[in-house]
Amino acid sequence: MDRIEANRILAENVQNKNIRNHSLAVAAIMEGLAGKMGENKETWWLTGVLHDLDYEKTATCIEKHGLETAKLLDGKVEEDIIYAIKAHNGIYTGVGARSNMDIALIASDALSGLIISTALIMPSKKISEVTVESLVKKFKKKDFAKAVSREKIMTCQRLNLTQEEFLWIGLEAIKLGL
Image (cartoon, rainbow, N blue to C red):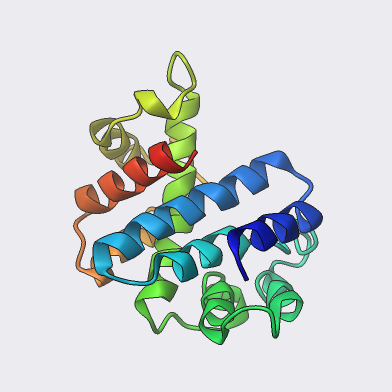
C-alpha cells in the first residue's frame, strides 16, 4: 500500500477531521522515529496513518478498537502493521507490544495528543509556536490534557529515548509533516 491509497482509506473510514488530522500527526511522528532508529519510514508512516481507521465505528465498544481495523486491512498491508495497530490498544485487545514499531505507535499516539493540545493553547493556535520546553511543562501538569496518557508517552524509554529526545523528534516531525 502506498501513501495515496492509505490516505484514500483514511478518508473513506474516518469522517471526523480531527481524527484524520490525529492520524496524520501520528504518521509524521512514526516516520520521524523510523528515521532516527534506522527503520523503514514508509512502513512506520503507514502504521501511524492507518492505526485509527475504526475509531468512529468502535467508539462505543473500545475493546474492538484496532481489531476492526485489522480486519479491514487484512491482506492489504504487512502483518507487522496489523499487529502494531492491535497492540496500540493492547489494554483492551490483549495484544502486547513486542517490536519497536509497536512501542513507537503506542508512544506516538499519546504524544500527538500532547502536542496538539499544547498548540491549541498557543496565541496563534499553531504548532510552529510549540517548543520542547512547553511540552515538558504541559507534560508535568496532570490537569492539562487529562486524556493524554503520560505513561504511554514514556514508553519511549523502551526505544532508548529520553523524554526530551522523544518530544523533540515528535514535535519536529509534526512541524515538517503538517
